[in-house]
Image 1 (cartoon, rainbow, N blue to C red):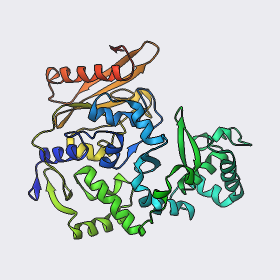
Image 2: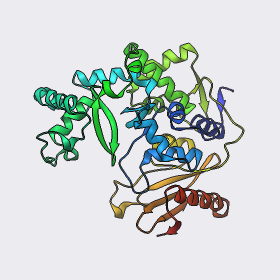
Image 3: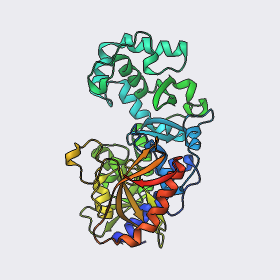
Length: 379
């Protein structure tokens, strides 16, 4: 592969890195390939973490992801990767630097840091109650008050749980209607994983950045930093080390102002076939600036946008056909009517409707059936 890539080559490299040309066989394989599967509470269509596998595999048993994430022999764990994420168990030692920062009063939200300083007795009490009673949701804690109406309406008990989660003393045992149920880390993360000695902090960051590079194929320094939420300074140091090892190679990409880094082992397929409907939280489209630079696709999710300011709808999903993002579709599951509602469809400039609709209609029918819905309906 040369030191100069066309934008088409960069797209195919990125799509291959994300598993669109050779779909991973199961949830664990996908998590290993892309590094993290983002969690999100929005349930307009289906919980977002189920959709990345559908985008690559089509219909698959959703309980396969549930078992991988929260089953008795789980292969994934929850922690802060890009955002709240499902991560391969093998990555547990590489997030010790983030857990350590939380323990020492940084690396988490200000309100949680303040609680840790001002009310350590509450944190100890919450941890002790879970040790004695077993897995608990926030609302099951003794003395749990109503939310204060502050940040997300979280009570101090919930913030104590989140502090313990950030610092690694608690983790997610399972989800109950998407509510996180917490337990002691020692009762959830297998002992053989917890026994793995974490490398030093710089090595942790370097290995995570190498995973990010592999998951993106080709990326700028900014892209690499954002994948696991590193500072630009931390990313710069890790990139220099990886480049020195030959794991990254500097290249130019057509139309990109900044130099890019090509991951060792990145593949350039002749084509990336098929079509996909992408979740707003799919790792391919996490970084909206990268999506625009790579695909010429200006993308914003509008669930937090006032209705009168929305351009393309409420829960807007990009549509991929081949190596291009060609349209966006606003979808909702009408579970009472057992219908998949297509509330809006917008094509990119220059895209011919007739070239896209057969593939999109097939994907919409597959999606409806997979969700247990009987039909696709405009609405």
